[in-house]
Image (cartoon, rainbow, N blue to C red; front, side):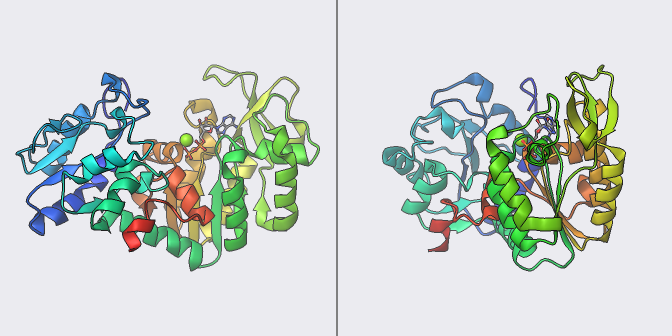
Length: 357
Ligand code: ADP
Ligand code: MG
């Protein structure tokens, strides 16, 4: 959302098949529970689900009234959207009383929120522990797709990992390096690898306290871990900044690397073209700024044109691939960011455990 308006309704549209399946199966009433942003356990109009209720009504072609939290009495319409559950402090603490209040709204719980299954929250875990529970169609598909690319990928399989902080992605890198044939690194996280190699990175975003971790990764991975060979540098992360493209051992003092360069793009695109499976999380550069978006755009194009089975996840990565117009050519665009990473890490996600029982 931007300025109170929905700019991307992908997750809303993805929730429709389960809602329609429930209606077709004869559900008398569907109470949709969701959250938006981090309102800190108190009502905050900036995070109201009112615009979501409107958008959902449009895609469903039926009225979807927004009901307050906690609902006073039983809502009468067949489909209702409960106001942002994070307006109640009991949501994120998985408070038993709040979970019980949510559970009292229904006979059966269906979890279709893949993006939240890594949270031990009342609407994710607490309710599932109280009611007969099942995975929705979207959640089921997310798990099936990610399991497939991890456990039985068609080879060669290539993972592309970018984004801001290597510390967020060390565990997933570790796991991916065991499962896939090649990991292409982009985004700011490459600079911690360059520090580990003893290169100067100027003012690039890097995490010196993670040098030992990335050194260990490099040793274990050998040539399956691929780093950029050139980067686009500037004094500032601004559209108007003068940019220079240099080899990674030539980053000018006082400047930072904000995107991968053309030689890296060519290498990464070739690897993606040859791949049979591609898994992508994290932009190759500061893709929100046009001057530093070409690496992400070009990699998105390579993924879109590749015959590989392709999966893209992560809030910023998905936003970029949609903005560049390649989302339709990707086999699976995940609705999970953090949840996808934790699933790929091999964690037993708290929201999935009660669904198996
Ligand atoms: P996702 O949301 O897809 O998981 P992340 O949140 O991990 O991705 O990373 C996206 C962020 O990384 C963006 O805000 C982007 O500006 C930032 N980023 C990528 N490359 C660089 C870079 N070279 N320098 C600074 N920030 C970067
Ligand atoms: Mg992000």
